[in-house]
Length: 282
Image 1 (cartoon, rainbow, N blue to C red):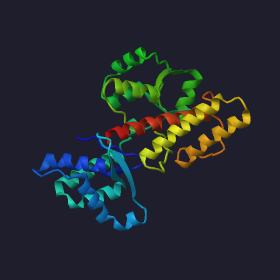
Image 2 (cartoon, rainbow, N blue to C red; image 1 turned 120 degrees about the vertical axis):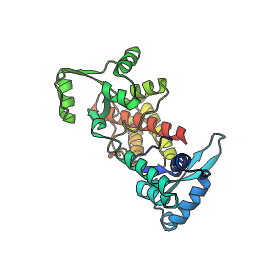
Image 3 (tube, rainbow, N blue to C red; image 1 turned 45 degrees about the horizontal axis):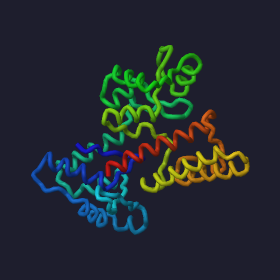
Image 4 (cartoon, rainbow, N blue to C red; image 1 turned 45 degrees about the vertical axis):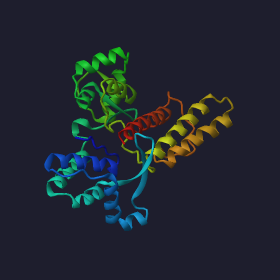
């Protein structure tokens, strides 16, 4: 099965056609649906919405480096496109989409530490379908020692309404979880994105903007003159606001030892990692 991904309950036409063809192969002896033919169906089905700009058109690059168009659909629009498929295929794809809509089950509910998404060892083991022993061994090799005790653990439990009598807890940030996943040849889900993140641009443009913000933040932190430093860091914050990841254009706090500074650093890194993984699937 093609691993259809969704973020903010949206899907690309390229992801959708791969899922349609998977279930066509499962249930019937029918030729595959070409992505170009799906685009024609979308244009016919949503002619008015496309003309009004209510459905976004984006681009993807194939393995030969050539660019082609694709559409970004909401879950309801993706389901509407399926009306032209057979009953079996339609039901199977819709069921799969609905499962993805609720893919953050109570056991997978995002946990945060100081407003940044984290996982426990048990959660990462379930995410990657491996044992907790394997996770702990890999954490040891990576020399990752983010263990909460005392007041830090109390803060974590309060922040997440976390019910446990444990006296210490190992937490895992995105960078380490992604390293473990890649070492095992696996893909992380969108777990490490922030609940409040709302992408305002197609993935390719989000990727470019995030890299620009990251570069500006790095450059700004090295500038000694306060006025120049604040100007550059505000430009980084302005980019984050424009793409839907921050809410204060005049923010100049990129100190990783502060709550807001660490929060922005993780927002940039986590979202950039997720988008890079998504674009590799296209």
